[in-house]
Image 1: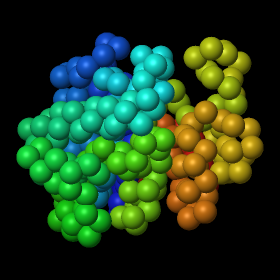
Image 2: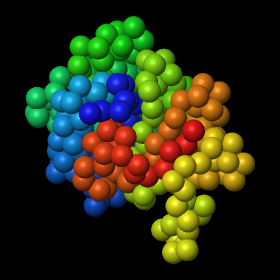
Image 3: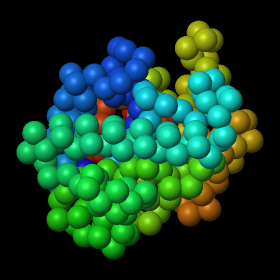
Image 4: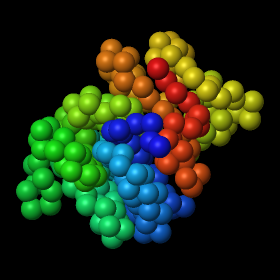
Length: 235
């Protein structure tokens, strides 16, 4: 039995690249789509926000000599590429999916309209929110938080490469300690690298819980949706 009625799932662009550093790995996207479809078929309403780091990241070294606004706009367009790839994979496994973009591009996707997005979710369609917030200087973490609040999601679920929130980077420090639960204030005060501070502060101000879990373990999206104690709960 699902614990949450409506979830916004935040994926990094790198999650779609699979073992590669760049682009979209069709097998990885297919596997992710199958997992997400299984959850959707239990009746959970799902919104997705996917990053664009597998193509372009506005704060990366490649963008250092660029105007930050131009670089961020390129990053937003990269998220649209990922959203269309995910939409294609999800519809191939029988789940109706809509891509809604914060930057208008009518030939490619629907414009983001809050009430229309909620209606899609109520009808059992997965909604992929692309192009961030359409504003530079805001990350896709912040976009995911904003969309989750706008559509009244019960939780933000952030899929990562590690098992949850640690006191330091577990990929560099073998003695890193995993938090099972942690408060918004602790995340901010200790500068725990899990989401942008602005996104965490928005969740804190609106009492929106965040679940951080390992996306690379097959079945974890379903485990999260039924409320199994995986990863880290920020509340």
